[in-house]
Image (cartoon, rainbow, N blue to C red; front, side):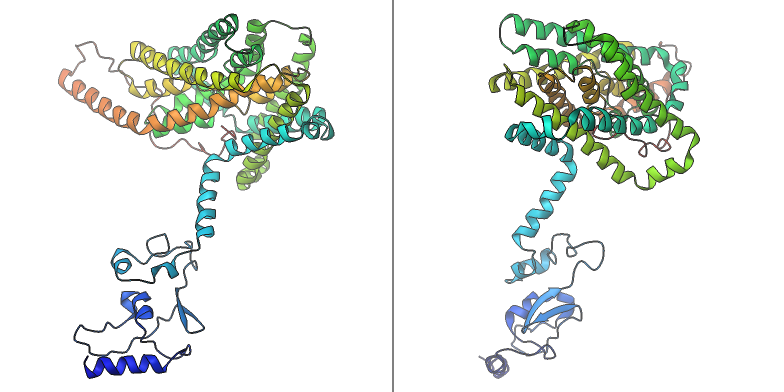
Length: 477
């Protein structure tokens, strides 16, 4: 051992707990410091002084690393509390610089919750309803709080967000819009109705869940989800906005007609009372929201300013409705068993995938050289809204003890369409790019379009983002 190295060891041994003002020569501290803040000791054993960086924390003589979190990030340069790969390999005490396990777990959970908040809240609401049904079925006065206050609040915000100005674009592509709306309302519901009647006839599924499948497929398409998935897949955003707005406005009147037409009018349903309540709880609040959108810029700006909180409030109202609905179902009891629910989930998945495939080939047949429209049609033909569907179902069947089972299939369909659409979006976006390049090359080669290609400009194609496209989203979609 060289004399310089021996001097270093003697100095270390004589300094058990150095003060914050002294420099350190301990190997652990030396290695824990960032490379740009220490002077390394050469292999030859030559001693050089090492100083603490100015932004390190020293408590009881221990260097606790740099103070991260003074800016927008709580982590280090690599975003996870580590200094980098180079320093990571030479830092035996790197675990000291990492966040505690419970903090990292909490941060991960927050990310998961932020991405799946609605689904998590719905599961919690159903479990709470199962634990003590009388709370939501009786004590919270659901006949006032859930069926009136929460529903009216949801539809006022829905009316505020519906961009009816887009309805003027209907004439620009009326054939495509008609196909999408007819498929969404009539084809999907009729296919599901036929499958559900078959399952009832063979005794494979409880009637309440089978009826719920039909009810869930009679509601209109989503607003936000269709627009987001269409945009991320490279589809036609303008058509997505129009069809979502038109479908939801039409669904207020068409959905009850379809449901009662498929399932009939049972003894506990008074048609006059149903449409009267729908007018007060659904149509009137949407109209109020539209009037506020047109004539009260102050209110619109206020909602935009606190958009995050209004979205959360609308989501919580929807979860509260679901909670009271299932409280009522669990309190009254049901013929459905756990096995029936799993069978229903599997059938819903097969039906959704099959209907999406059928919609894709139908779009290919009718709009072969319009890839952007085909993408929007894929999502618009099969998506179903929870934000408007659950209040509509609750308004029609508020006195029916099976209303929870009528709602459950829609709550299953909703996350399925999101997961499948999110998985398909990157691949579809690449396909759209290839198709656009192919059509452009064929257009350049044919010149006048003598091969029969549709070379007319796309009247619904837009460039850039739609103005205000994210500010008027419907919540929980």
